[in-house]
Amino acid sequence: MNEDFVQYARAKGLAEWVVIRRHALRAALNPFLTLFGLSLGGLLGGSVIVETVLGWPGIGALIVTAVRNRDVPVVMGVVLVASAAVWFGNTAAEFLQMLNDRRISVSEKR
Image (cartoon, rainbow, N blue to C red; front, side, top):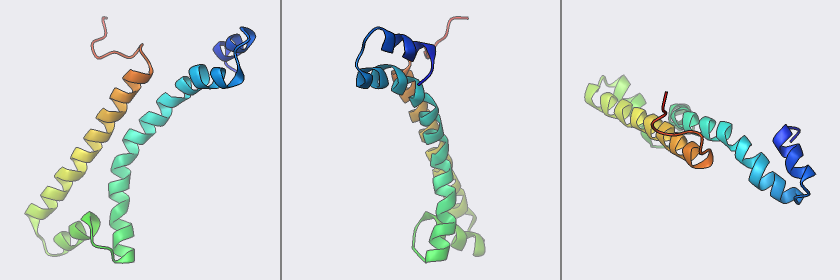
């Protein structure tokens, strides 16, 4: 909120909610989107612990049972689904960042 572009928007006489919504929020949204995309894989990894402790059936309990029974195809399938979720989260975060910040483009001219 103390950046120069926010101070300049306030100096122009814009309302505080306009300054926050149009200027400060857009600048603060990119790091949030990056953490959102990266945390999707952590959610799947954490589900193993939660499902095992609470006894809930799900993908975490499935992989624990598959590892204990040495069921390689099931382990490979769960790893594939988890990696696809990480990829999807990162891709979604990148596209949302491109929508938020026009300076980020798919094909940068170097």
